[in-house]
Amino acid sequence: MRKVKQVIPSSKVNMGGIILDQPLPTASVDQIDPFLLIHHWHNVLPGNQKQNEVGVGPHPHRGFSPVTFIFKGGVHHRDSRGNDSIIYEGGTQWMNAGRGIVHSERPHKKVAEEGGEFEIIQFWVNNPAKFKMEHPSYQPLSKDNTPVYSSENGKAKVYVVAGNYKGLEGKISAHSPLITLRMELEENGTLDFSIQEDYNTLIYQLDGELTVNDSEQTKAKDLIWFDNDGKEEIKISANKKSRAILLAGEPLNEEVVSYGPFVMNSQTEVMEAMRDAQMGKMGVLIEEF
Image (cartoon, rainbow, N blue to C red; front, side, top):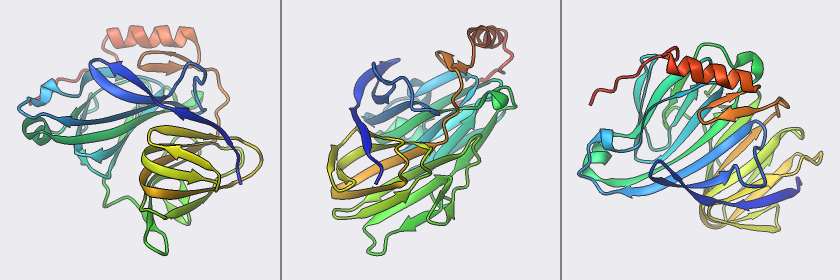
C-alpha cells in the first residue's frame, strides 16, 4: 500500500472575519501539486441576518479552479458571466476562473435569515499554463446528479465528483487528470482506492476517526498526504462515523506565482491580472437581494 508521507493538522485562520480550518498551505507545505489550498468552514449561523451580510461578496479570480463541496446548508453562487445558482447539501460548485471572473459565495437566503448549520470545503485546483487564459466557466452539480458507490455492507459511500472510482465516472470536467471524491463511513466501514502511482494524493478528514492502511490513526481535521512511492493502493477504515474527501491529481510541475485571488506562472502575469481586475476586464458583478 502507498505510504503515508505526512499527517498535517489543520490550523485556524481568519479570512475576512470568517474563522476557517486550513490544512493547506502550511508553513512547510506550500502546495500538493495541483492542489493549492483547502479551507473548511463549519459554523452555525445565528439567523436574523440579511444574505448580503454573510459569506463572501464579489471578488475576482484568474488562472485556477476554486471548487466548493457543500456539506450543510446551501451556497448561492453569482458571477460576472451571468451564472446564478444555489447548490445544497451534497452538491458541488466547480468554477474555472480562466482569464478572469468576478463571483460571490454566500450562504443561501433561508439559512441567513433563519439560521442553521452551514459547512463547506473549498479547495483550489491549479490550471495548466495553456488553460489559464481560456474563457471562464461554471459547473454546478447537485447531490442527486453525483454518481455514488456503496460498499457491499452499506457502511461506506463514495460520491464521485471528478475522475473515476470503481467504474463510476464523475460529471465534472477538469483541466488536468484528477480524482475528487467525497466519502461517508459508518463505524467499521472500509474503503479501498487504486490511485495512479504518479498522482499526488491526499485525504482530508472532516470528522470522526480513521485508520489508514491498517496502521496510521487519524482524527478530525487532519490532512493525510501520501508518498508517490510507486504503489497505487490505499485503504481506510472508520473507527467511528467519519466524513472525508480524497483529492488526487497528476502534478503539473509548473512554476506557480500567486497573489491573493490570482494564480499564474510568472510575476508579470500576476501584475497583468491585477491591472485587468482593476480595469474591469474580468467583468462586473452587481448582486441583487
